[in-house]
Length: 102
Length: 228
Image (cartoon, rainbow over all chains, first blue to last red; front, side, top):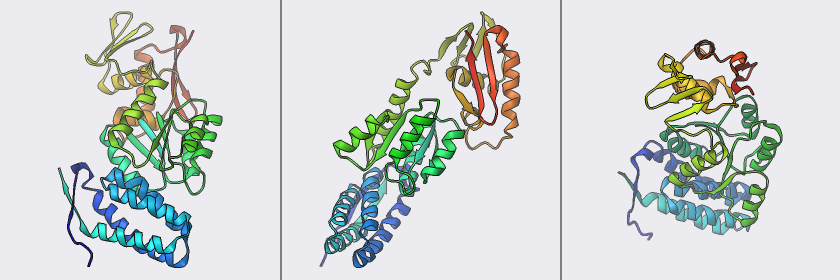
């Protein structure tokens, strides 16, 4: 049973308008990554990982950047099972993140 | 400052727009290299921010085009998740002025933008008082004199004059002038700029016989030059 401990993230209030959409897009990415891993669309998965790596920390979600980096590496290696595992890890993180604003 | 961004990730664009416009600058974002190049060929900008991996043209291709084709040397900052030493060296040797690795940090990005503009245009500073030939402009007091004689200008004419003098020699597009003086969100007839420029030309005596030229460049904008 996966741990359900909330992950509190405190962000600048200036991000309040754009964070919900950002997190929603990352949830869509989880679904996309599972499809891409299943179909061998590693170039697409690499791109998603690359973009996550590039945006996560800027929004205040360093874990998204970390996972994005790993997804990109797994995609370059053509490792579908690793991509699936990372998609699960991302989904778990997103389900537990609890955002508040200063 | 007026900043052009080449970036295909809309989440990244939203983040940078908040930071950059929150700092008082204007941001024009383009998701395709072809759109970016079309705009920078006909508009003026103070800074370019380039991502590397763009679907139709890479950031390096766009950088090469900029350095080969634009008369003005606009500072370029690369903003990319590619972080190898080889990548950094390649881009800097190709003509970029700075290289930032994503994920970006807000204050660092803003500081580097200001630093690179400062390096590129050291004389275009934001000092409150400055001399431009026989003109003395004091932005804090909102006063302008010519050979010691005060010249009365409207608020917008003064702002326009300050902007033109601080960017002497640069070809500034109408949209750039418009944003700098009236702000990006203001709805205004573009002919208004022509009217204000014409009035400034008269009120300040910006004519060749006085050693100045405030020239209209067809389909581009205006350039204030001091004639030798």
